[in-house]
Image 1: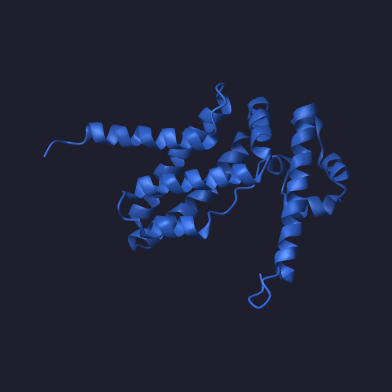
Image 2: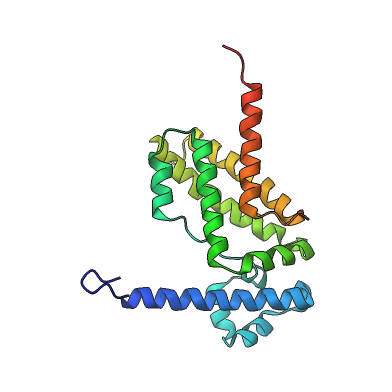
Length: 207
């Protein structure tokens, strides 16, 4: 937004167009894979159905598998600020809230989550791609934990908390993939973090 007029500036409009095109390609890829299976769909077919060139496809996605995975919307500034400044709860609790909010916001802004769930249940071969995304997320989590606790991103505390949180997230994501109850991913995340919290409380030594 421009400060003077309150109207979107050129960069905002360009970002919106890129986001819309990315979502279009992803939606087409998901629909084709759900209809025919991952192995039977090619990048060229996804590109044609999306009305984009093969080159444009690869400007947005490194592979057809990546195109089928919904984009994780960056956490909102307010949520990050709360995580960094709210010391009324332990870091892991604050982190579970941040991850819950991020996934919940992504679900509200994209219709692809439910389709992705159906596709992933049929195509377990995309698991490695999903876990690569989680690996990259671990670095971002470590940086946030370090900021919250005033440490370097490579500190033992930041790296350990980040690794633990992503391990918990992996459990939640895998349970969501195989879930028959229709539970949402963010609820599986909350459930997984709460399980760890209960376990730590039960195992804590008496004073």
